[in-house]
Length: 153
Image 1: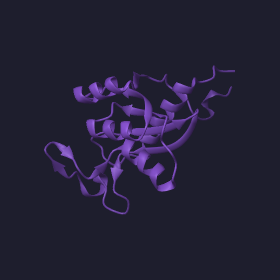
Image 2: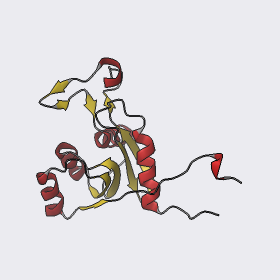
Image 3: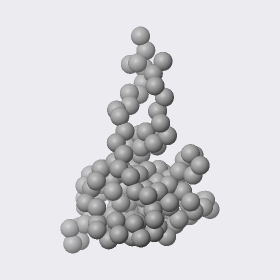
């Protein structure tokens, strides 16, 4: 029998899997919102529902940013808003350090811990906000997880 995944490894592995649905190839990002060790929502980088995605229409660049894409963290929060699920006192697992706008939204939504894999362009003000609010933010890399039948003898 193999070792059981920790909760952190489990949720980060889910974020990595979810990132594979991203439609903006500038960053394949996945996010998992968790409350009491239960996944309450997921999100990935992609265009506004029922509109063009970057992989279909190309990037819509403005000031060095693709504005066509809704970030993974925002999509997870929006999923909760649409379904009436509280995000207060939750945590998020995300494949990349959240941008400043996602950081502000996460803090406003009541996220209490941010676990990220890639230390992708951390904004100093995002770090300052997290520290000033006492929000834990932790870098976590998940060991490679093998899925499928190849583990059987």
